Length: 108
Image (tube, rainbow, N blue to C red; front, side, top):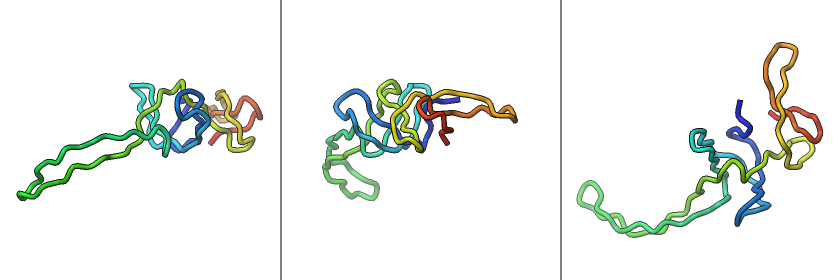
């Protein structure tokens, strides 16, 4: 089970965007990175290039969310609205779930 999942609200705890919150758009498991909505915005300049049909795509500046390392974000608990560490426990049915270490409530 992962500590951070897609759809979680996280807070950045290190780097240029420290203190910002956002929703996890994607988790890159093999690289231990997450992409957070409206956080860590980068710009790339693209050259003009030919398109199919003999047309030309103009040069442009593209803005996108760059991945952050998992160690630089913390999950925000929905009930206490604080960033927290994540714990794991099994319920009566034997299903593993995540919980907030501060307020002891389940994280969906």
